[in-house]
Image (cartoon, rainbow, N blue to C red; front, side):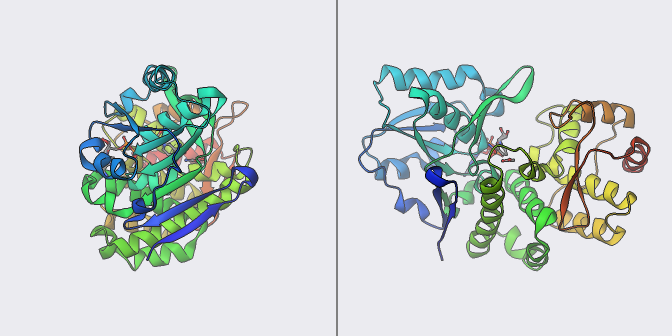
Length: 351
Ligand code: NAD
Ligand code: GLY
């Protein structure tokens, strides 16, 4: 059964349509459209989108995080400008988080902001990146360093599109699903634990429910804190550890979701050492992630190097490490005063 929910942001509110075949509802209301996609997704799903929008222009980008740059966004902007697209034109982002972020960024600056629709094609994009309006590109000085908050006018999460997603990419999306449960929804955690087989087999009904519940959680957080002045940072559970792991192991070795899975277990272990979460809860989180084919232990990284990498994270404020921790599992908190010795103990144990 298909489901719809709304991100409640006043005049910037928008619906998220979720379910198998949701793409059949795509309607650009006769507006001029530019579909932005990549050379992996185009052969798979562009014909379906063009069926609904036969007059749309297409901007097909090369696949990969390394193309999430200002140059690539410039290609989209050139095509919009050279094609005489207007203020009321529409961008359709057809792809994973990389395409959604670049296309959304181009939409945020063309004519000082035009509408865009997100059609996420990865599980990660369905439960996270397509919702909430963070758009942007990378710079050599930092990931997502250049960007804007620009909400889509609609998100269409068609679960049929996940059938072709490579297994590791699918599992990486499941890490973000577990993240929502760990940070704020123990009932979801129970439910995920009881649906491991269906999750592994990509059961469409179970995935519809999963995407709905994750988007609902994200929509609530975004509605309360659109520009990440406070609680939106809770969505970064596992990310400070994860970014350090991604950097130390070399970008591309681990997928972002895999690093986040390891990072969540590390955040749980640290929470346990602080007396905030129990050893059973750490084991519970680790066991669910493992059952979903995700890694849960970091590659060997010397603790001093790990801490230095964590300190480069953009969530460091006034030189203090701000970590999202569990107090307990199912309730994330932001902490800026974790004793360094306890962090080191936790890293020693993980190494
Ligand atoms: P991705 O967009 O690189 O997609 C992963 C791979 O899967 C790519 O090779 C892609 O071409 C391929 N692919 C996508 N859909 C497919 C399908 N249905 N069938 C077959 N192959 C398919 O990666 P991602 O994990 O979706 O997104 C990661 C990006 O999202 C990062 O750049 C990250 O910074 C960003 N992100 C943004 C936010 C946000 O709030 N804006 C949140 C989280 C992550
Ligand atoms: N992915 C984190 C956020 O959207 O805030």
